[in-house]
Image (cartoon, rainbow, N blue to C red):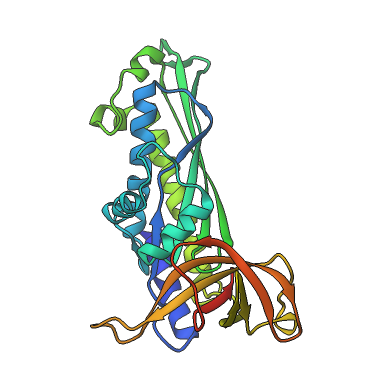
Length: 299
């Protein structure tokens, strides 16, 4: 409660500092990957990796100033982009997906440790009880969707010690069940999740209003002519264009019902020669035909 109150005061201070209310930041949490020692059964591991992002997203959504993208929306984009459920999203793909779902920040993470070990016995009166310590470790990155920049790193850990239990019994617990949550593994996991969410929220508040989420201004121009397979573009060396650069090409279209026109990606081109005020490029990847008047921007 105290931590949440401190966070809320921080949001208010940030808003006053910039003369306006702090903008609510949209965050998308992608499914975690396994990396390191995860001493669980196959089914527990599968369920945990699938549910971990949702648990983090749910707790992060309760933090003031943060809007979390619904998991259903992320799944819709996965289906639209024809990703298989078994395929993990890499960083570049996640940034592109972040743009499609309108997120400001994406969170990608790995489950690095789920382990336990038996400790020395402790005496309770005349009774000596052996103990087991469970440890959970997670790593994450906050990435700005517009710039692709890693804004913050997260190293979260949780630990819990209780009366010794059989590893076999721990493996038999069903992830998400009340019995699992009450176990030493469940308590260590929840402690790690709380640590992760606290660090993630602090990272978001740190970058809120700092300009780190704004896209870096990049050279842009348009296709002004063609000659065979060559595309002539009206930006050159003075704009920072160099040979072998990859440029994105868009068409700009007015859509009924929208106040502003939208940009439709047409593909990418590769610069093959550069003059002071112009360059020549050839198609690298074509999604739709490109032509005179289409917008070009450094990737």
